[in-house]
Length: 171
Image 1: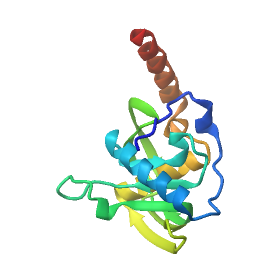
Image 2: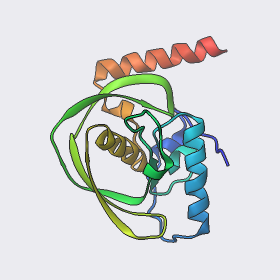
Image 3: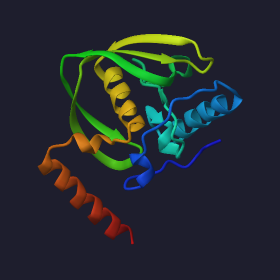
């Protein structure tokens, strides 16, 4: 089922998500719905809070070399924790909860993440480049933050101005 993606400035996006304690059918339904919702919105990642569920759940499915999002490559992460990060990269990011806005953000180049899959089995993933960006971006949602909060003061002011103008033009 495709769920509604909440967008900035919805206050729910500022919510710190809670750890999942039950790996049950309800969690599986949430993960399946999140996947359908993300694909429908042409996204590469989605955190549960973006569909108004404050749980430490996220999914990532970045396109492969053929630019196809293969469901076999889908990452479903429950209660993720970054255990290591190093290096620096700058990547132009966008967000389904901040539609039509893209800006360069500085992130770690290389990370190691520990998390649980949908069955409660512990996983560890080491990654870099765009996949590391996606992890860090989605994990920020779990702490109640959006990528625009990483922008410099000037870029943040520019974003707020563009956002207000876009709202006016939609009326």
